[in-house]
Length: 222
Image: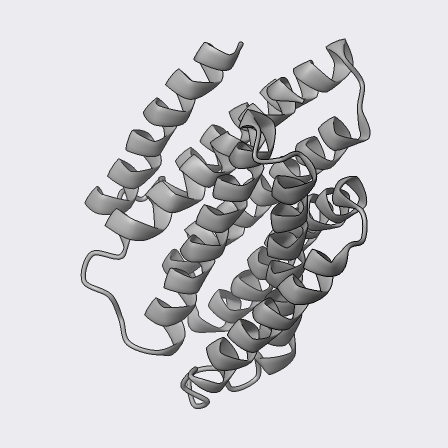
């Protein structure tokens, strides 16, 4: 199963990056299918060997697939619906990643490192927020702040797991996977609310899908 996840992760990364690159009209649907396949793999692993981690990763991937759909199709919609779909997509990702983050923090437990990570991620979140273009974020401040809080929870949990499990293969997958999701979201924020990137598809989707695949791989290594 590990090999299958790795192979599909690589294939899926090429697919979601490719549809972004060529800007196909089915971009949102294709991304949703790829993430849904990861979700079905997580569901299968959880059914075979039940764990709360498996439930959390399955739920996280399910909501991520929904987020992929709404964010993927929003650019083809009228301006009024575009904003609505963005908020819905953002909210779905926030719920999905919160499932990851809360579970990772429960697994890791509380330690001095939790406090240190909290301080570091809070500083990063504040810097992220203050450097956004306020004109471009008008009407979206509350969702963005909520998303920054959720992203920080995810990273604090991932760092905690890496420490608690002494950087074994399981915890490394969680740490790198979560880190890549954080990088992907930061690139999206930069592209939308600071300065547009040249060919953002070459950076955002690979970090996103590899990150999701590594978190799924961690489930099979737990």
